[in-house]
Amino acid sequence: MQMTDISLKRLNKVGRHTDDQTKGLHLWVKPTRQMYWIFRYTLNGKREGISLGAYPEIGLRQARQRALEARLKVNQLVSPMKVKKAFQSTEKMAKCPKFSEFALDYIETDLLPSCRTKVMEQSPLISENSGYETIQIYR
Image (cartoon, rainbow, N blue to C red; front, side, top):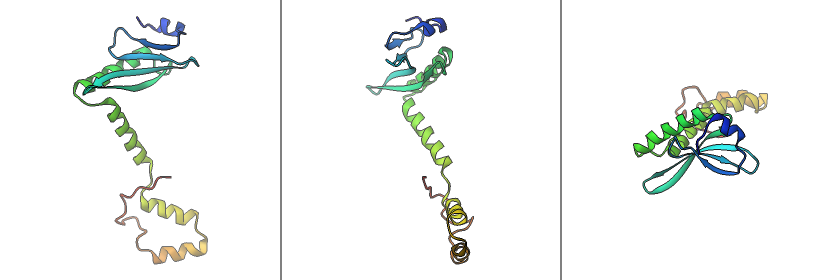
């Protein structure tokens, strides 16, 4: 299908629509009329796909650009899906507090004032320079 901005706005047929200009780029139209950009590729004999975003938030030009970037990764034998998941996991880890931050926050907000001073005096592990900086706690 020859995709243009005008043809996409008029599109109402449910299913997968392939872009003729960009190899592997598809627009999936759901029965609820929601539209999603998908890039489908084959890597090491296995068929995979990656979501590029929802239409109209991601326009045709931007979807084609993202598909070309993903195609370059496939040509280098790198899975775009694995790259995306690795990026998302590093973002998640960056948002998690370090153990010392979590412990200090807990002591300051959740402990009773009478226990707070006692814990701070008796616990040498809870400090800014403790050896537990790499422990991550998920909330």
